[in-house]
Length: 192
Image (cartoon, rainbow, N blue to C red):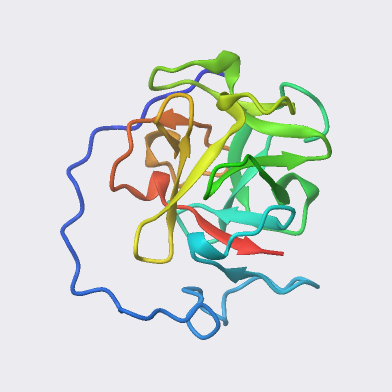
């Protein structure tokens, strides 16, 4: 599938002064009455607490209960990345691997890593799963946004992981795009 770049939208207005000491233990940002029950408890983390070797689910900022997911079996090479309803599926369980650079990780599922296809460096490059090689196109820098969400920036291109057109639909494609202030690039990382 081809990546459809997001529509240009004006930046969101600046919000009031952020909470100087957000507590992820008491303020997960989700409504407990609408959260899906799982047998594991997930909690948001700030960039300085991410651990290589830990597994995370990545919630998108495009709508409630949407997560980074793979279009089919994540253990198969070339499987496309998209957003889907959050759940306990293996296609949403990304292991953060060390790269030797602070706050920069590979995101893998069973030996395949989230990557920008063919090492594309231009906006609209598609994102998929591929055999883990440690290539820069498989390395993602986690940058906190100050609101509990993060940008995931492809190291090789300096472009952000992005839901196409800031879509709220299940199955919307994920690629890379110029970093901006839309929900399409706001990722909340929950340790599983």
